[in-house]
Structure formats: C-alpha cells, structure tokens
Amino acid sequence: MTTDPASLDRLHDLVLPPAVPWWPPAPGWYAVIVLLLLAAGWLGWRLWQRWQANRYRREALRILATLADAPAMAELLRRTALAMAPRIVIAGKTGEAWVDWLAAQCPEAMPATVRAQLAAGIYARPAADEDLGALRAYTARWIARHRPAASIALGRDSFGTQTDME
Image (cartoon, rainbow, N blue to C red; front, top):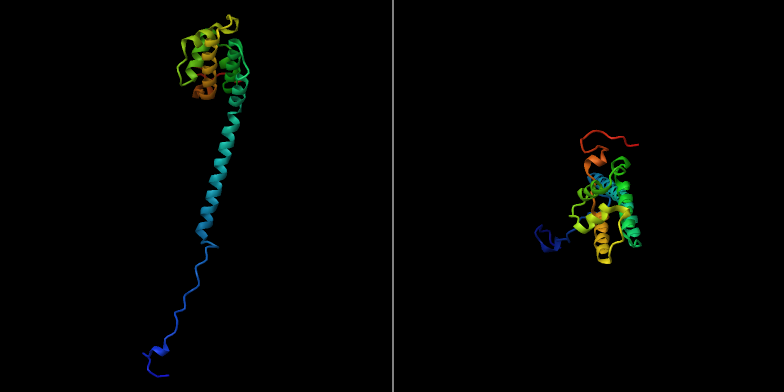
C-alpha cells in the first residue's frame, strides 16, 4: 500500500444513509388524517340524514306502482305532501287551490289534463287509460322532484306570519 493520500487504493465504497420510512409520519400528518376522518364522518352522517329524509319519497313511488285509478293517485299526492309540509298548510287546500299549490312545489309544468283530474278530486269519473298515464307520470315526477318552499319548512303561511304547527 502506498502512503499517498490520493492513491486509488485508499478509496472506499460510498455508504448511503438508510431510506426514509413512510411511517410514522410527521406530526402535521396526524392532524391532516384526523381532519379527513372527521370530514368523512360528517359527510357520511349528512348523506344518511338525506337518505332518511327522502324515505317518504321512496315509499310513495313504491305505492304509486300499484295504483290503478286517479282518485288513489290524488290521495297519494296528498299523503306525500303531508309528509313534507305541516298539516295546517295542506289540509285546507282543495280544488284549484290544491292544484296550484302542487304546481308551485314542482319545477316541472303541470299538464292541463293532470290539472283537470286533480282539481276534480276523488269524486271525478274514472279517467281513460291515456289520461291516467299522464297523471301517473306527473305524480312520479312530483314525488321525485318536489321542493318544499322555505316558508313551508319554517311553518309560515303565504303572508309570512307564523302558523300553528300542532
């Protein structure tokens, strides 16, 4: 061996440091993980609440599939409306006032044949099959897409005064 410090005989292999482990993470990542878990829990809870709140819609659509006449569909619409709005708002509405209220809660326009069938109420003569199809289709769309007005959810009448919710 030579004593020359620049000699190639004195070279050694490079020693690499150990690989950086992926666990345990830095303390900041624990906070991020906790926040993500909290956000996922909150989102799951909200989705569960929404699913439970729309249970009456699923049940009404299931019942609608078994109905065969216009008065039964009109009754189903009223029962569905009672599930989403206070009884005091729904119970007194009949005839044109009832149909206007239904039309106001749905984003789709109500066909004239359906309007006539619902305004006639349960005492109307049985409708023809083609008329019943339009009523059934609108009923399904109303059940699936109706949106309660903010005043209904707050228990307020059309004049903005508080109504008795009992």
